[in-house]
Image 1 (cartoon, rainbow, N blue to C red):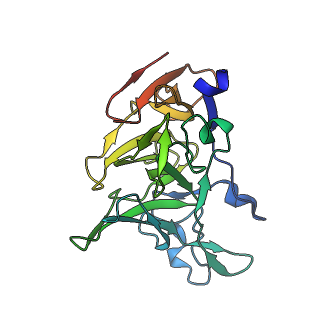
Image 2 (image 1 turned 90 degrees about the vertical axis):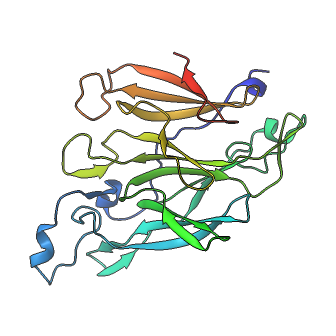
Amino acid sequence: MKNALFFLLGSLIFIFTSCSDDDLAQKGFSVTPSSRTSNKDNPIDGLKEDSLKFQTKPSSILLTKFPQYRLATLYMINYQKDRKSTFIGSNHFHGTYSDYSRRDGNQWNYNFMPGLEAVYGYNLVNVSHFDTASQKSHNLFETPVLIKTLYYPANTNDTLNNVPVVRNYYMVTAYNEDTNGDGFINVHDLRRLFYFNIEGQQKTLLIPENYAVVKSEYDPANDHMYIFAQLDENSNGKADDLEPTHVFWIDLKNPLNNGRVY
C-alpha cells in the first residue's frame, strides 16, 4: 500500500557514465579563460580548461508531446589527451518499472513520471528549443550550464489514476553558476531546479537559489514531486554534510504551484 501512494523513483544524484579517464568524474567546465590557448600543441581539455566559449554539438532530437515543439540536446565537445580525439556525451533516460505505473488505471509507458520523460548525459550544457510553426529556435539557457536532468512532455499516451496526463512545460535541474568560487561550474556547486513554459520561455527558479537539490520522490496520489534540498546555511556556495535538508513539493499539474513540506 505504501508503494501505491508514495515511492521513490530514483535519486537525482548523478550516476556517472563509465570511462577510463579519472578526470571524467569531475565533469564540468571552467568559467575563466584557458591558459592553454597559447600552447597550440596541447588542445584544450574540455573537462577542466574550457572557457564559456567552448564548442558544443547536438546529440539528438527529442520529440515532445506537442509536434510544434522539438528539443535538441547540446553537449560540450570534450578532448581526450591520451587518445588525441574528441567526443561528446549522449542521451540516457531515467525510467520507472514500478508495478503501480502499469495497473489500476495507470499507464506511464515506463516514463520517469507520468507525462514526463527525463533525459541526462555527460556534459550536457544546454537545450535548443525549436518551434516548427515559426521555424525559430533558441537555447533554454543564455550561457552554458551543467544539466543534470531535463524533464519534458512525454510523447506517449500516459494515464494517472484513470486520467490522461499531458504536461505542457519543461523542468531542468542544473548547475548554472560557479557558486563555490573555485573557477568551475561542476557538481561541487549548488544544483538548482528551473521551470520553462512549453514555448521554452518564462524561466523560473522553483527552489530558492540558496539550496542545493539532492534528490526527488514522486507521490502519484497527489501528482506531486518532492524535492530534497540542502540549505547553504554558511553561504559557501556548496552543500555540506551537516547543513539542514528541507523538502519542497511541486504540483506537476502546474509546477509554479509549489511549497515546502519540511
